[in-house]
Length: 212
Image 1 (cartoon, rainbow, N blue to C red):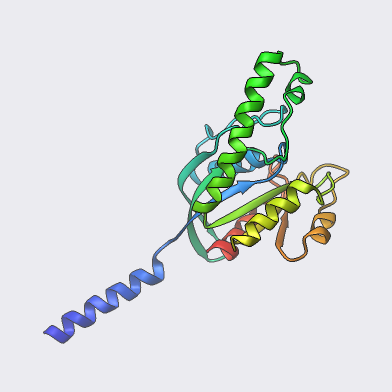
Image 2: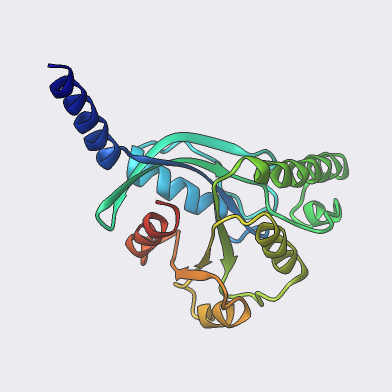
């Protein structure tokens, strides 16, 4: 009886290990207005039905504090992965309050936003210590080889964090995802339109492969 009981327990543990969901905390990083929050909202909506995650704005640095959505289960590529999605503020080497004034905000409000955005960038860097992987979102209409992108990628490589580059805004006529791939060939890349949902299934498969 002891042997049979032990065998059943071992078999049960083995079966659970096969079907147990992989859980990963994934941060969404990138420059301001690359489409990070739009992507985060789409992922959360597609897999949890929640439409209240994050605010999208044409004003840069709208996300000034990291936002987290736990327990988002993605089923793709024959596997299941449970994600904690962390949407982070736009990464920047310098945040000038005049950027906000250009959008019609008052000087006082602009300085307040600039201070919050700077604190948000510091917070986003600290979050890297607590993540299992990163989705690095880039605007495929822009030159990818910037100081911000190079610094962020170097930081993630130094931490040995799994990294998937998301070439966003492929729906725009001047988009060039190939330019991003040529700039950072050492990392996997998926081209999408977070706004329209183009190629989004390819992204989910890549997430399952790279973080599952």
